[in-house]
Length: 400
Image (cartoon, rainbow, N blue to C red):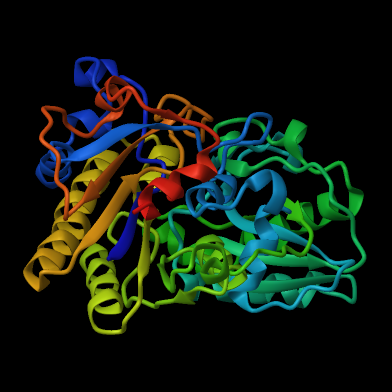
């Protein structure tokens, strides 16, 4: 038996008036997921433990079977694992976003944050900007490391876990109330604007109609993580297929293999089909037991508040990931169990994450059911199954 999880990050949402009260998942054309739903168990799962902030870090740990209340030490330390940064016990890791702030205000504190991803900036352009920051701000206490796209890392030697706000939680807002209370972090963010605002890369981005990456934004502080091996925990030899450092870092911590897919970039136009094909190869040719396919695009479109693009991302997952995986597995005659779900909702109304439960679909190729439902939030609730805590859902995937 082979096991697969296909995770559409932030895919769940709320009913939207423009869609006649349907969610993007309900509205999107998803014939493959709806076909599978008629032969599957569907229900709802609470991936965010009560009292914890909703995010891809806690939620994906839950989906992989790791109780966030035990294993979560912060988002950035997981990304440090992906980048290959060795953390000392006294180190603090910080997510270091490249964001877009308005440029008309007189003071830094009066500016508004308009894009947490700087227009999904390329890693190549971002690396040049981070290098410019390093030359001015790096010292024996603060070290900067390039990640992927707008997502980068800062290590604070001998630091402390401080409360910091995620930039995607405050889009369109004046940044003053959300700046760090820690003076050194505050000053570095402020200086980063002066370093980046007139950088040649940002001048060129403006000419092209793209958002400039004109400031750093620190958040997600945490200490060195310690995850149990996924194989030791589940008995399965697994691979991770994702474009984002967070998921790659979780895989490193869990001693899973990360598979690189060319063209996978965490955006709307990622290489969906390449991810599916990589999973199939790992399962059918390389002898792996388990594949985790993570697709970031719906979450990014939710943060951007772009309804049409969120629907497009969901349809791409159905057509180029789910359909490709199931067709290949069926053609090979390989028995498999498939779990499809989001990690959390990213409602377009609020443009950030929520803690609401999400719908899951669990399909077994050896024991297809006969049901009438489709795959979406409404049908998931109608399925009558409500799983909490979320980290127990994977037990249903692996049960015999």
